[in-house]
Amino acid sequence: MNTEFASNVYEFTEALFKEFLVEFEGKEVGSDECALEGIMKFHFPDYKPGDKVKGKKKKDPNAPKRALTGYTYFGKMNTKKINAEIAKIGGDPPPKYVKILGKLWSELSDTEKAKWNKKAAAADAKAKEEAEAQKNADEGNESGEE
Image (cartoon, rainbow, N blue to C red; front, side, top):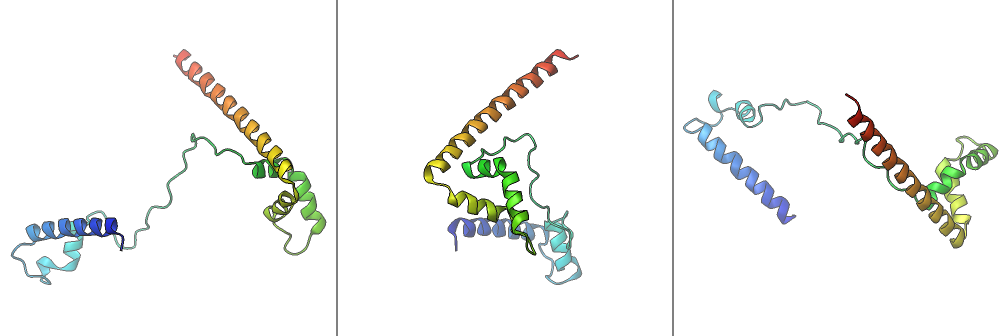
């Protein structure tokens, strides 16, 4: 068992029982005044059994996008070619886009892949510059409006 996890569980359990001993002192465990439902409500007042647990955190729409790799940039620039390849092959079900993209990418030489990586880095730098310019323009508009 992970020692950090065990330590956290130990501290939580210790705190839980300390509160239990104070709140339910002198009461008989299992009696109406010290039944499981009452104990659980005392320790977890907002929790209702059956409630759905909150899902994933929402992605910040203002967060910067991840940089393109040569592979993703290659796929982005060759979308029409890949879709034509899928249409040509056909079949039921048709091959997935990523499968065709992977096949085309693997057929490239290392020097061609390096060229795509450089193109992706340049496109990413350009996108960051444009985003920064847009951010500065937006900040300028906000400070000028009243």
